[in-house]
Amino acid sequence: MISLGDVPLTLVVGGYAQKWHLGTKAGVTDTVRACRDFAPAVFPLPHPSWRNTAWIKKNPWFEAELLPALQTRIKEVLT
Image (cartoon, rainbow, N blue to C red; front, side, top):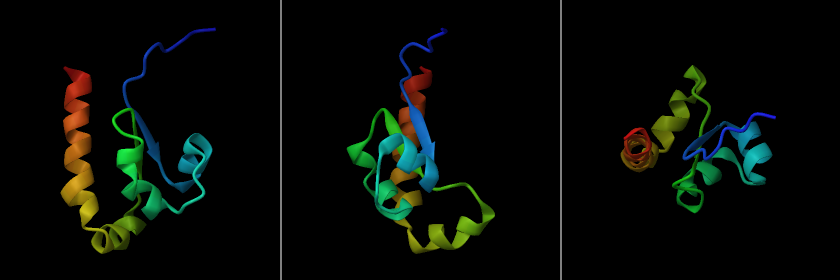
């Protein structure tokens, strides 16, 4: 069996993935809001669908706080 080795960052995208990989019972909003509980190795994210435009507007903290933290982590992983 082939191993990936150390995976420094995992993006868990959408509610189904969050329930499967993180074992969360909370909804997407609560799980994504609790991203600090999983960081820096795992970042739960909403599904990137055009239908999530309303979700993003209702949750401005996502673009203001979480995305910059994710961008910083991606830079750390890639350097």
